[in-house]
Image (tube, rainbow, N blue to C red; front, side):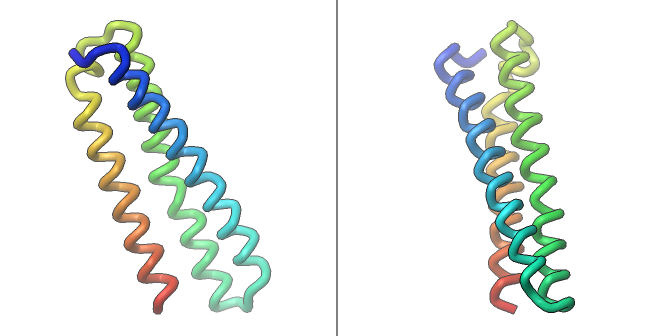
Length: 102
């Protein structure tokens, strides 16, 4: 089981990542309203797609709290779940980059 400081670091990174993604989703949603129908739809879908990494970051935060409360499963798998969250967010960033370029 990881140390308490490690668990708190993962908890704060999950909450921080969810907050940053939420701000980005709001930016995309407001940007979608200012464009034409075709371009606006792309921004709307990107904003909607942000829900997956936001919800997974919040789930990571929830599991971090479980690890703080002594849940052994959460403690053992916390860093693996952080890696999965980073992969989900990275995949979303690549999709967003491709959508902006095309």
